Structures are given as C-alpha cells and as structure tokens.
Image (cartoon, rainbow, N blue to C red; front, side, top):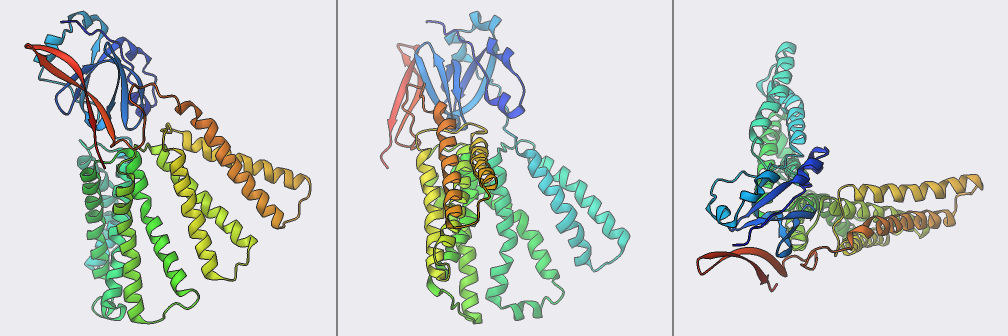
Length: 442
C-alpha cells in the first residue's frame, strides 16, 4: 500500500490564539471524519466552515462540521505512519475546543450576578440591610464566574454561540412585557404591587432563555456566521413588525387596552419568530463571522441612507417614510448578502470595509469644510454618495483576494447542493482512499 507522507499548517488554532505557529508547518495532520474516515494532508486553506487539504490524491475540501477529530504527527514519525497503521488506530486526540467567546459568557454571568441577582435576591427577601446587600453582590459577582466556568468547561463556544445565548437571555427577560400586557397591567400590579414577582420571573427566565437558545444552536448545527446572523435577526424582526403596524395605522394608532394586548405580544412574537425564519434562509449558506458582520453593517448603512432620503423628500407622510425606510434598509441587507454569495470574508475583512466607508465620508466632510459648504439637499446627496462609494469600493478591494478558488470543489455558498467528501474503501481487503460525491435536491 502506498504511504501517504504530508506536511501541514494549522491555521485555525493560531487565529484563535493570535500567536505565531509557524513551527507546526513541520508536522503532519490526521483528520478523522464523523463517518470514521481517516485523511492525511497539508492544509492549504481554511475558513469558519471548511478546510481545504492537499493530499497525494489531489485537493479535498472538508466541512468542519464533518470533522470529528484532528491529530498532529511530528515529521520524524512520518516514515512509520502507514495506511495500515492508520486503520488500526482507535484512540484519537480530539481537536481543541473553540472557546473564543468563553470569556464573554463569564463576564456576562458575573455582571448578571452583580446586578440582577446581587440586588434582586435581597429585595425579594425583603431586606434593606446594607451589609447583606453588599455581601450578596460580591458573592453573586464571584459565583457567576465559577458557575459559568463549570458550565462552559467542555463547551464549543464560538462567538456566534455566545450571541445566540445572549439574545436568548434577553428574550427571556423581555417576555415579562407581553405577559403582563395580556394579563392587564392593572391586574398584574394588583397582585404584584412591590414588583417582587416580576423580578423573580425575570431572574428565572434569563437563564431559561439562554439555555433554550443554546439548544436551538445545537439543533440547527449552526456555523459561527450563521449563528451571528440569526441572533441579529431578533431586532430585525421587531423593527419590521413595528414598521408594518406603522404602515397599517399611520398616525392613528389605536388607543385601547384590547389593541395593546394584541399589538405588544405580536411584536414580541415577531422577535422570537425572526430567528426561525432567518434559519430557513441562511441554513444553506456558508457564512463566516465577517459575512454576518458585513451583512449587519450593510443593513445599518441602508438605514442611514433611508434617513437621508426621507430628509430629501417630504417627511410629513409617515407611511411613505416608513415604507421607504423598510425598503432601503432591507434592500441593503439582501444586496449585501448577494455580494458575498460566492466568497467568504476572512476575519477582520468586515471591519476594514467599515473603516473604508468611514474614511470616504471623512474625506468628503473635510472637503466640505475647506470650501465652506452650506448644508443643503446637495450635501445629503454627497453624503450618501461618499458612504455608498466607500462601502462598495472597499468591499471590492478587500474581497478580491477571496475570489480565487483553490479547491477542486466549486465554491458555492449554497453548500447543500453538492458535497464531496473522502472515504476509505476496502478493495480486496486492502484500504483504498476514494471520493464520495453527493448531490442534494432542495
């Protein structure tokens, strides 16, 4: 059986830790897939979603969700690393956990402990003893660290997962608003005059919401970018629902308790429903964290553009203004997503695009000051031109290096259509490395 001798570069670990790992280029990589296949190769490219490795059989792209474990082998051991040996191995070292956002979870828990629970528990217990309150704050502050440290000790915790947990905690706390509205504010505070029941409810729903959001993260099998995009859809759902009501009612919103009982819970329902809708839309896309950041930044740019347009037009018509705002804001989001349909932005690319957009606007503003420009409609048009030109030009410059596809598998953000994965086949009792091509019809 032909031996497979390879060198490798571990990029993912060095990105997470921000350190120089150049010596690892003299080590080999052994990847075990979730199907039990064993692959050796030199890593030539990687992003948040997949790894491209060069083997003796050509270049192979493997989705990170398909990688079960990874093992490095020193160069001096390569000559003894035969295919037959690989098939006999059962004990594999698991890949390092991605815990880039673990510290954020700990900080969030400590802050919640110091505020919500540190003040909340003494209040619920009905004590105003300063010594007890101070002790409660400190105990909850420190306890938040140890509780979250234990909870996240063996957790794969990328930035997107932390975002999902955070937005879930926020939705859990905010659920008291529609609940109290449906019950009726007078009825609610008639049996909860001092607000203790409300506080206990919030203290219970914050961790409940975080856990439920985390369950959805695992159930949907989200990448870092997908989780970031889905978590950011919560305010998007709320804003669009609020805009829809503004289009319906205009300046004449209903002023009755029955209307409040219908509108407020529906706004909360739109906020909760948005992640499920976003998951259906983004589940077939390979989004990196910077892809999501670029999309969200573009939505914000669309909102700024809509404000400029409303200022240029007659802003007295509420419905027209809201319609324009919703159309331009959402339109920029969809357009931004189409721009990255065939590329993956690398770590930091979205921030560079943001800086380029700001730089273009600063130059335009500087020129305006030099020529003593007076504010007018032309100023608004020039503002939009500078912002949009800087945004688009910087995106094209930054993303240019991502257009080259070095993999034999055609890069397509709609990754569910065609997938290629390596397999080990038994041919006359001899192991042979092969390729499995799978096409999925949506």
